[in-house]
Amino acid sequence: MVLDGLRRLISQQKDLVCCGEASTPVEAQTAVVSYKPDLVILDLRLKGGDGLELIKSLRTIIPGLRILILSQYDAPLYVERALRAGALGYVVKEQAAEDVLRAIRTVLAGEVYLARGLAALLLHKFVGTDPKAPGAGIEQLTDRELHILQLLGSGLSTREIASELRLSFKTVESHRENIKHKLGIQGAAALVHYASQWAREQVSLAPQIVREAFKRLYRSVQTTQQPPASSSK
Image 1 (cartoon, helix red, strand yellow):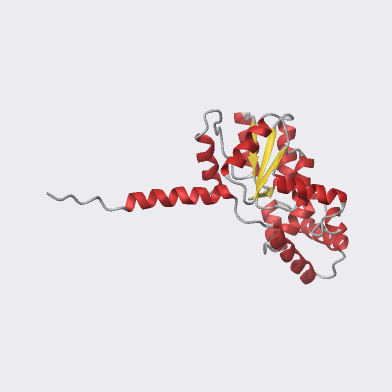
Image 2: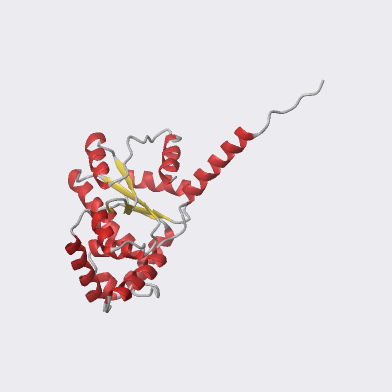
């Protein structure tokens, strides 16, 4: 629904066109090489890969590529990591379609786009006044370790994570041990509990663009199912 909503939104603009789509990191890399887009709109949660790593990879393929993140994660940590990886904008949570379009045009112009709320969260984090800021342990996690923590929190086992990320079982086990050490966690059960709680805290509500797409679909179905008007003589 996110992809369909974005496609519909972009196709309605006279100055924008959607030149390609991708569902996995490999497909995204192939599409970028084929279409050479001016901008990529990217989700951080991807099937078979990590959005933060993909940002770096795409920027390697096309150094000047502009990337806008559209994500469910509204934690300052993810925003900061995405910008450091090379993204120029971050859109999340309750932002409406007009905000997404504003973000697209801002990033296309080569400028950084952050919603006011996200910018305020980052500012509080940097000056040390954010009571919800993650602990020092989380900050020490690498992008890969953060992604594995996220997958653990979504209910995946070590073997499933290895399959998802195309890594060996031992490699994922090693990452788990590093995560426990950095977070000061003892035991596998405690790690899974922490990861589950962490994952729930990071996920925001679905983007406004998704709800708008559902509304358009609902109106279309309602119009189609309406019985023809009866006429009287």
